[in-house]
Length: 447
Image 1 (cartoon, rainbow, N blue to C red):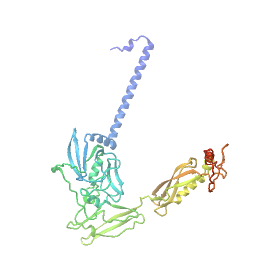
Image 2: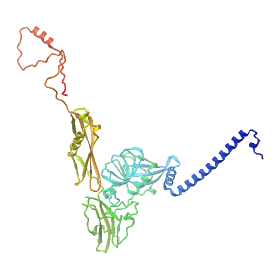
Image 3: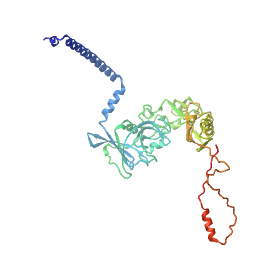
Image 4: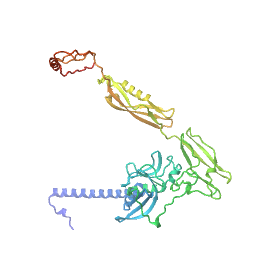
């Protein structure tokens, strides 16, 4: 087959067409090479990137949506899931719960999730927000460590209600909610409403607590001593027990000790002690004489608590001489404001370095300005407190002689004297009416 370009007689047109054809061929080759490289790089990234897999899995799981029904009356959370039909749902499992008294009847959508969150003075390991101030969370902990669970909080599940707007679950159930939070709807029933639970799928029992142990028995953590306990053995949870400086030491909340018969003897263990006045580590040995049991664990005292800064006076005032720049933009004004606040500040820890911060002198003007006092302890923790100082111009009392507008009459000073009655009362009334006039005075401030 003959090339159609050869049939073109005009040499200029023929040359242009050949050039265009060559450009198209080269561009096609380059595009093919780039697409091959791009495809290869993406395949390699899929093999090595965990993030890509996670995103893919998360999207695929969106096909299954869960629906929680919370019954404050029964202290139970029932889990349902949708199967194809958005109007139909099937029962999955129930959760034991302690529903706060401030939880309101409504339908919610789960939002953000958090690990180790402090609410109302207690720590919670797994947390999922369902409302502005409401969370579905694991039971209370004294500190942000898995061996510091409050035993009374665990016992409150299905038997007592707490005061806030949160829904407490066991550690394992709260983790399940957190892991599936992006696809959950939460319906809170009225105080008198109940859930009809299937009898064959309902298990509302909870594992019993071992004496003195501070772990949640349902915690999926591999270090949980409930998962490793054996007869005739002292079982430790985490290898290093962390204690906050100055806090009371609980030596037994990370241990489950059993004798040869399987009896829990944790409370009968003997051990040495550690001081929490200073940061440091110490090896604590535990023994049980009757069964000849022994073991050791490291106790580490740390300081992660920032110092507490308190400012005694909450209403500070600072007066400027005038609003003239030479009276306002002065470093001495800023220094006086800082010193005034610093004298009213105190810290709950000794040997802290205090610092006072406020606006620059160029920004000083009438109104409220923010002043922040920070305190840094020896461990590098920083605490802070904020207050406000009201800045205004000093009021002038004015001159002794008051300024009088032109044509304004002097105001007569009336002394406390008895008024003499005049015979002609009509003339008196006329004279008094003529004297009535509005008198104004203007005070001119000193400059």
